[in-house]
Length: 389
Image 1 (cartoon, rainbow, N blue to C red):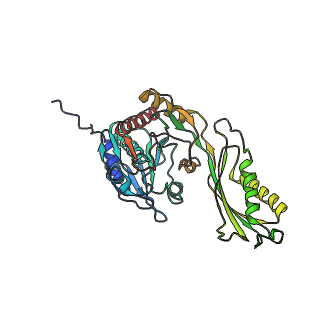
Image 2: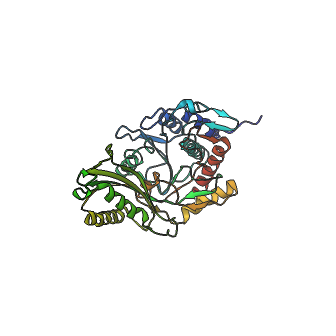
Image 3: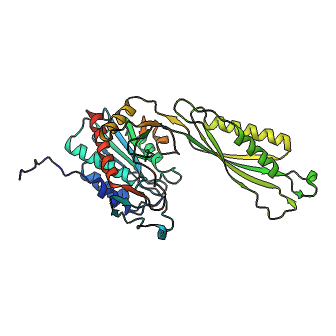
């Protein structure tokens, strides 16, 4: 048998790594051993690893190459997962990482321990076998599925203080609706939640003229909001949407007009709007109904992320070429779906997202095809080779 050269390394198996990560019970905010596992792998391959823990959340920053390199390719992802729910409802142990009939089962198998395993395996193999002229960076958080205040934001804050930087970044979230390769994300819609309190005057339902009914006023306001066409979409985004998510009064009496009622709406908005402009619109609508009814409104607004777009160009072209080369599919450039940590990375460097088919994420019996994990590593490996070529 021909001996391998001393410089050759055995490739990292992304499937085994995914299974090991799934076995780590890293339900937000628990680290569960996932980042420790990755740190051992990356440190052994020559990455400088730093734990960037904040607010009870564990995060990991790993860089191969010198700080301040002329170019650096970054990967971003998360190892925290949503709760499994009723474990008895699962076909397999949600933290077992079992592989059966070509599928790997468990919480996080799709979202997104497989993505993290694929880019970690690709990065380790790449720097070992073809050390690049530049830096390869992995920014991995344990706080994406919850409030995301101490995850990727903590990593970016630390990077700014430490003089660390990514030239470009790929977030490994699931992006494909049906087949691996059919979509990548070049932006995301913004998300705003408005909690609305209507304050009226309590009274007897037989004498409504003596009361100010907050339920009637709230329903009128919510109807005005839901009936408004926010826009018809923009060049890269579908139309913005507003959904009424709850109306709560808590009034057990049928003959009493209550003093208060509450409602909540969620807006997913494109780049025709900002959180500030939508806040102004909501307050103006509330003021109009207040003037009509005499019921006072208080609004508590929260924006979990503004809409953003990385215009089609060198980064999206790089990823699309690699996806097509490995899958034969040209990925559509998408901005659909909810929020991701790309909303934070976009303030640091150009960012796109590409990952697996996401059909089972957050579901009972979350699982991923083993072949997809292998193919995803191949795509990420090609991206690294092409970027540093």
